Length: 223
Image 1 (spheres, rainbow, N blue to C red):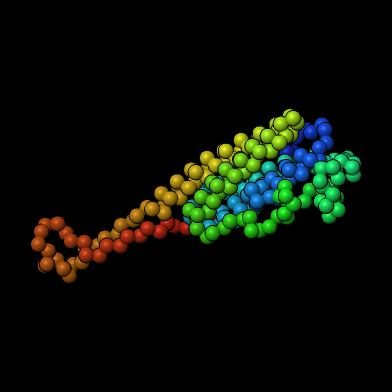
Image 2: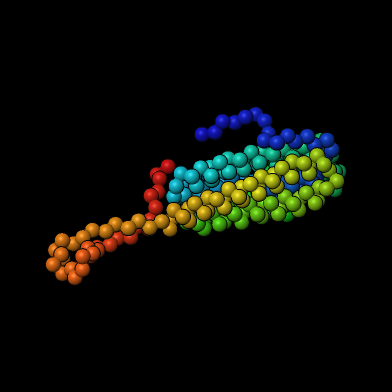
């Protein structure tokens, strides 16, 4: 359950429209390394995590990615608001305008629409967290490219820098979660009991352990 605050996580106030920048930035809305894919990936993966800490990390970051999705959508909207047909055509957005007008539609910069194939859920906590680490690095790299492309528009660069910084924080948190899950899954619990029937066969004063069970699985919460 979420509580929605009617404000952006970071303020956005773009004074000059620029449909060309919107065409590139929309990739972080619905592209393969964008915020929609990230939020759905993390909020889906959380159910299979083996402990509450990992679940909480994925839940927290997945929720924040929804806030970032709202930010990216706001950037795209402000860059295209009140743009003329000529400006839209010049930016190469004629096909987009034909299908979606000036709505914010989830797609990549090259025009490929969002697909669930972007969401990696392997059913293995280690594989999933490794995927999440890579996803955050790819998102960071994408924001850095967008910052380069938007270098002459400080109103756009400012929130993009904020989003880039948050990807770095997420990468660090996923690294911590991965180490904790690895430690949990590698933990060995040893249970031993003496077989009283074999007491007469002991040749030393040290009790023999005839039945040893190693349990390497971790308790998995239901929620």
